[in-house]
Length: 138
Image 1 (cartoon, rainbow, N blue to C red):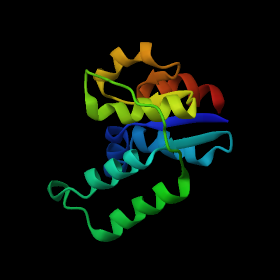
Image 2: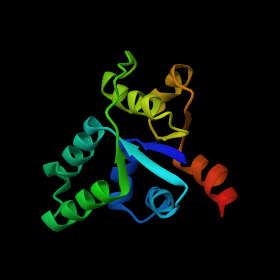
Image 3: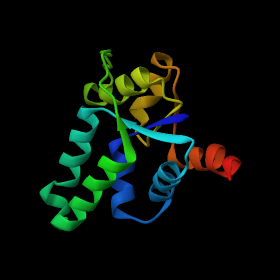
Image 4: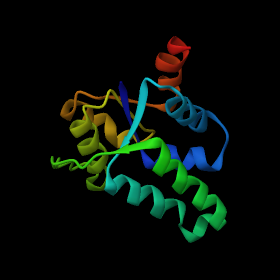
């Protein structure tokens, strides 16, 4: 099983546009050999960010994404704490990746470049994931 953790920015981009972030998420959820791994803290952040007033998303849209998170992810409870000084709110993604022994952490956040030395997980952008994983998998 290829375990993947997805940063909130990628999830939000997928929710708003039908471009590469959505293509990557759909690929992950449609492949039997891939697993989208989250923690309760990540789920809370996904939900909170999508519900922000500035996005003005209709309730049915929020419900659709809530169902995607519920049906298409595997939730784990990390028992590890990482002190990620670069951006403390990003530590939850590293903790999840470490606890799940994830193969990939997909992000567009440059703060994670420093984190590669903290985890064995490959920290990768959406375009790199598409090129290095999806195109070779298909």
